[in-house]
Length: 364
Image (cartoon, rainbow, N blue to C red; front, top):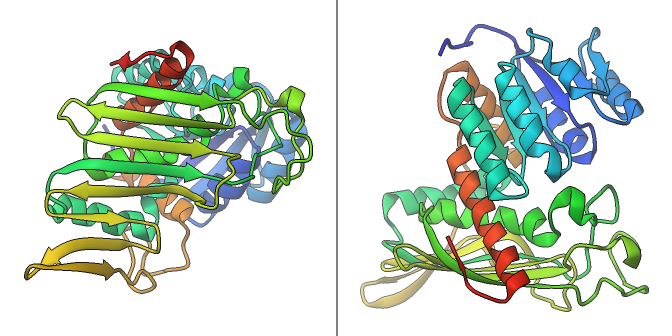
């Protein structure tokens, strides 16, 4: 594949809602020689507003994503649409010759995610998924230690994404048809991605899952973003999974938008290995045994940095995600989040939902 090191990267945005305008567009705007030249949304006003704020002077606006894909001068598209449309838009974009950054989750089920991976392999174009949690300082440090073997064989891990009362009441988050699920597929997906990445283990064997609709009908909710409408809340309010990998390792996954708990933590992981363990419960803590003494190391994450931050510690995880993605395109390298890895996340999420639906073990 030809590298584009000395070329301005031209980006088209498909979907101009909150995740696009608050994460993707501001991050891309900070990168030299990257231009956002096309914006598509089914609500034309959103595309127009995004083009005015982030686009080039001649940026084009569309309501039909296929018209945007017809522009052969566009190198990359970022797909920030509801989950149900991730797969077919991604496949169309890859087949039109574009590299694709698709927001998480990869797709609403394994079959749709596999179509995306097949299209990437068939076209030779790059595909990555928006798991920006990997680029936080705590995630980067823990992963570096995992790669060095600090933890030994990680055989137990806990993926956590728990909110007390923080149900997103805007957009289509509560719509099961459009999203494919609730907190499990929305925020649990981040925690699971982090956990699999730390373990470097993408071979699930079986899982058991439960999903609850216990609080959906509440009316005086105390919700952070205002009361939800019970008739619109068609997804689960919480879901939990017990996953066993082919090598015997165990993962416990907790996810909730609304749970009567004070143990509120989102998109974090804990890992336990044969040599040491780590968690993100109070900053980043590594527990080990040194000279026959139990020790806890709390990592100072205020100093130093991670790859692609150019020494600028003010950059967000979204900024770093965008920089490594553009670097992968420019220099024909693999992006940090590989589509095969994101496919495994989708596969496990689908297994948990299916186990919850049937009340039986789900075998992969």
